[in-house]
Length: 319
Length: 120
Image (cartoon, rainbow over all chains, first blue to last red; front, side):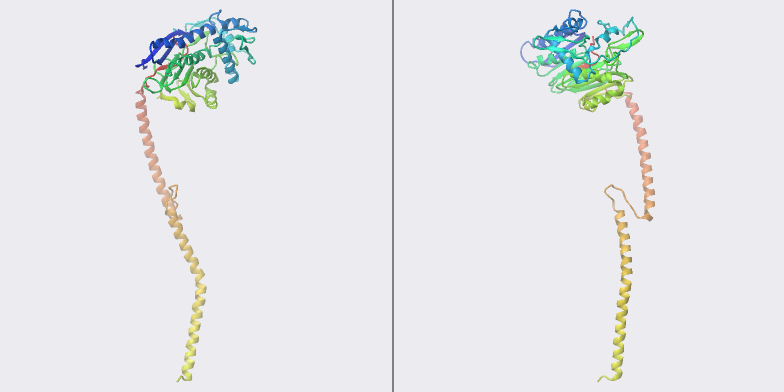
């Protein structure tokens, strides 16, 4: 059950980054819908500059010859700087250079995931050797980047950054707002009525009933899940969450990981890293990093780190 | 006037009295350590028994040897009785829990969903 916009609340929607983006805010003054426009616009800008599905996008132009310097627009430049920061802070467990692996797995275009898991022709997926350190270079004054020998994919951080920037754009106009972008959302201030924003964690096995509900204020919430982006190639089932260590789909024993944190881009990065750690190492990693994380095993059971307890409003208890 | 016979009789009485006093004193000296020892043992045993019967901070009771077995047997009976009741209660709660699990508890309404990125 979902709460429709209440009195004084304004909502806006946009389709971008292969996702339905929704912004809900308590806006004071005239023409409230207009005040949501800058926040929604952010998603269109990030998509235009950072998509890997359009060969003429600034990111793909840089990817075409990654060993050379390229001038890119501000959003793309900032996103690459943040990707480098995430690579460093996770000791390489988040690595945008998995683009080549995704293409090798057949994910070189928007696939029709909604209908069913698409089946692609191709060889059975194989692993590869580690890529070595990633050392991109940046020239802030001119907005130029040098990616290194490998092309990169910003899919693992781009949407979180868009949510961050959209919230920053909206905050001066509406302190209390919620931005929802598929797996990633940010809850600023209070929900209508003064309580915390309630965010349902969907069941990665399907169905409308959530596995948990989180109560959040001034917190981001992101999920890495296998619910949608799965397909078959060479007769083998694969998915979009690729382990940068060997280039194979990772996350053994897990279906989804949800992370709550102060920043949506950081939370998105860690939801992927914890997912790739797999069932065996996810609890230790989340707890060791002091992250609020919830993970769902392939058998449907839930696990959560101690920090997640403070946000948990409800969880499904299996019989 | 005191006759010689009266004077000798008095002296003999005094001597007898002195011997009696000496005997009592010697007897007292001989008896007291034993009596004190016995009294100390009795007192200690009484104290141990009294202290042992008093509840300790942990709520347990220590009793002197003769009553210890009886107390332990009583405790075991009580523990077994409680364990039996607990198991029965657990079985009852498990049965209730199983019945309740069939009726899902509804989640609270939400403002948003986090899940598969790119939900169409």
